[in-house]
Length: 500
Ligand SMILES: [Zn+2]
Image 1 (cartoon, rainbow, N blue to C red):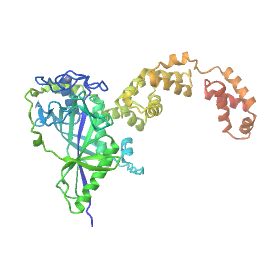
Image 2 (cartoon, protein in one colour):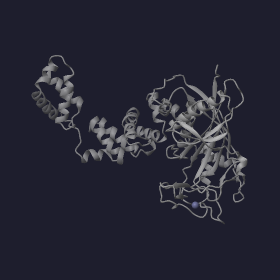
Image 3 (tube, protein in one colour):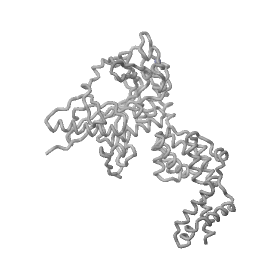
Image 4 (cartoon, rainbow, N blue to C red):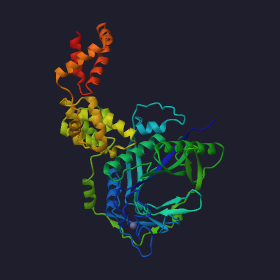
């Protein structure tokens, strides 16, 4: 009889911080420049150059640490991690081993109630739907530490396998590495944990946390053990997984591989493996190094960072209202369904737009509808994140007021919204300039209705014969004749009057 196994997972998450300049020099961190445009003697490891710590990096790291219930290390230091690789010009990476800035934290995750990301990622290989479990489970995932470090450059290999080029623009971009305890037991918990971290960091503005673009990267440490056992099995590490789907697949694949080995009497080897999401299997990259292999030692070029209580208090005072608190406040302040609140608060940008637009027009439910329906539709169509929304809350409020005061009808409003979505156009001006105002003169609408009735005897007969649906067709014809500028409600009312 085969044993039951439990999966034990810990995560190392690298997050690129949203500072304007690099961690130890004044070079820009902007993405997309010509190769090696953002470099200087420090971030290309020239002899005699000296690093100077970017204060903003320390503040972001502290902010993330405080938001994840960590202790802040009052006296922390930087260490050199020594290894050779062409994308690492100093032959060492400046990191923190002995005294990382944050320790002993946790985040609370929720599973059972699946988010869109969880649903997509947990879909089976063959696209089979997972069954929804409605019971919400809460769990704390421990954070062992958060440390600050610098990113490496990037190697670019040519197509012929002859030349490799190096781009040091990314060399020295600040990172924090968030190391969890081995507290997770399933892919669902891993995704819930990553989503929670991402939400906190995005609310803080410390990073955009995009897995696909590499501003958030996850290494998965996984082992299996017999259910009931208290000892950990030998773990393997899978590096740089860049989507929730590949993380889920890698966990499933690695769990099965390790169980197969144990079942056939073998031993799992501690190693780093690369997951190939197209082949659905992993392969060994190298045996896993231990810290001692890197010959860590305190960086003699950098002073220890002494963090005073006042500094911590200052960072604490600047923390934003996080999602959980926002959800509670929205429930008190706005008369909108919980479903709306969940969706709106899933992005700080959307929540900000919601609050400001509702404040201006006083119609939270209508603001929420525009965000949940048209905004979400266009974001999806254009493969954009809520963070990239360009229209201002003021213009959204203005659009809602235009519909309320019957200057335009709903379908015109949707047309105007599409333009506003792209360019933050002033909707009132746009309506004026493009002659889109609704015909509110009942006499004019009546004249059109009479014409439509005369031209559609069959539909008129259908309606009179009891087919109520025929009125819909006639309203459509009126709207068409009015070039969309009539109020469908008014047209409906007049038609009914004329036909009764
Ligand atoms: Zn530089």
